[in-house]
Amino acid sequence: MTYEPIWGGIIAWYLFLAGLGGGAFITSAFLKWTKPEATTMRRIGHIVAPVAVCIGLVLLMFDAKAGFLNPLRFALLLSNFGSVMTWGVVFLAAFTIIALIVLVLDLMKKSVPNWLDIVGVVAGVCVAIYTGVLLGVCQTFPLWNNALLPILFLVSALSTGAAAVIAIGILVKPQEFNEIGLLKKTHYALPAIEILLAASLVFITAHTNQAGFNSIMNLIGGQWGAWFWIGFVIVGLLAPTIIETVTLFFSSPQFEEGATARWLSFASDAGVLVGGFLLRYLVIVAALPLTMVVPML
Amino acid sequence: MTRYGMLVNTRKCIGCYACREACQHQNKLLDNEPFIRYEERVTGKFPTTDVEMVPMQCMQCTDAPCVSVCPTGASHIGPDGIVVIDHGRCIGCLYCMAACPYQLRVRNEETGAVDKCRFCVAAVKPGEAASNCVSACPMGVRTFGDLDDPESNVSREIRATGAKPLVEGLTEAAIYYAR
Image 1 (tube, chains in turn yellow, orange):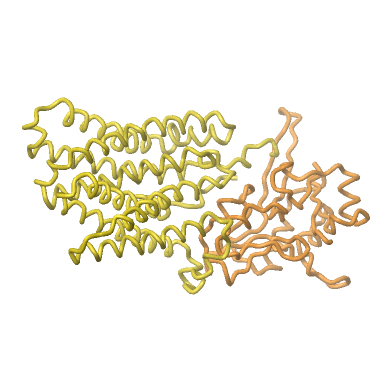
Image 2: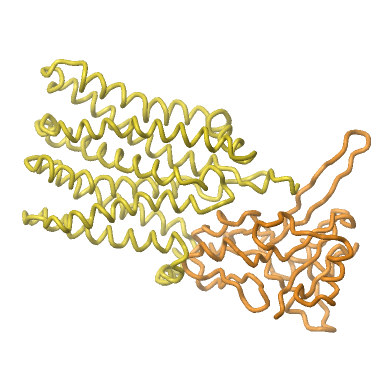
């Protein structure tokens, strides 16, 4: 049989936006605790978080056609607490509510209590991890069925969330960009960690079994090879790492605070966002199931 | 307890697709919504090759991954061990399709809900005329019955042919293959 991926672009967008929303909220909380003066960027994160997650949820409902045609059925989503998707609904609901409350408080210029930020950060981490576990419990797909994927998705979520906040911040309030050194350095480390996790995922999956090997070949050399190397590895991981390495560690403070550095950083953040989406998309479409190749046939 | 199951003897199968044809009519399925899928296995070297047709449909697993991932409880194990989809609860998230190790679930493109073999043979009353995968097969490939009853036709045939599930130890499938 020829195998068609069960999920596609819409679900990839959803996984990407859910992670990005969680990451943006965490970025805001990080800014609040390390650089309380950067109020504009913090507010950007507070806006991005619920907006991204809500767009993702709308896409999800659209993709779930039987529910889209009979919306009342979505109320049944809390029926089976053995299902990761049910837990995802719980995390997404909690996160969206918290993110909206925080956004309203921020827009009303009221202070957000620390405990609310902490609960929101925990919910954001849960949302990001859940997007990986959702795929991870499908034991048929060796590319998904491993404990690395949720961690990779979490790191990518933090990375894309911070990239979105910084990129929009550069457009809205460039002067604040020069004050968030710690966030920039933390954000810089994330693609580097992602490279290690992605490489581990590729090597380990290729050595699981025939289906794992075929999935990896499909990913890095087959139909999706060009997207993987150019889009995910170069644009999404290597280019941001190189750009940030040069601007953060090998250039003069004048250059680092200048307009050129700012636009370079903007490009690097855009690359991180492209890479973050492609990671989800490629992992979804390149995975091949076990039973096509087990000795049964 | 009754646990319905089926034996598929691929040694007898000629690959005529009559079982799928009967299934489409019996269950009034859309053209692009087959419950039965065929895999071909070619063994040997030319000129002494052998082609085996393996008809596959929902394995009615006792340890069903589709049931454990379904967030709405639409997929569940009904009486007699049959894996049932309550279409009124299905939101069409396709999680069960991703979880099914055999890729034997299919989405109804009109309703968006997921569907699969319903083991409709079990609903046929004795003496009643029916057209399904078991009755339509001209070669007698399929035997249906109660796996928990050691004296049922299907249990006896499984013993006689040494039939096994397609993948042993995976999901406790109720479809056995003699090959």
